[in-house]
Image (cartoon, rainbow, N blue to C red; front, side, top):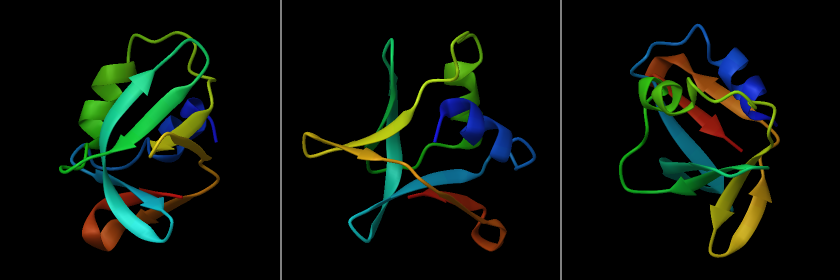
Length: 94
């Protein structure tokens, strides 16, 4: 999945929607987003990021077609799916 895909799929969601990562069958809050020249790295944390925070971080970024990866225990895990959960106002990236 690319950053542009994530932004397009979550475009109509509430700005206070929380983001979570599914890592090895555990659901962990998305705590940090780091952009490099060729990747967008997502790190688990203690408090989930909101859509408003993610939008704020990438709004001036021109090259949004970069791939998304989960960085977990010095391992890069690809993101291949998104699960939108409107009843809990959250999104899970798997």
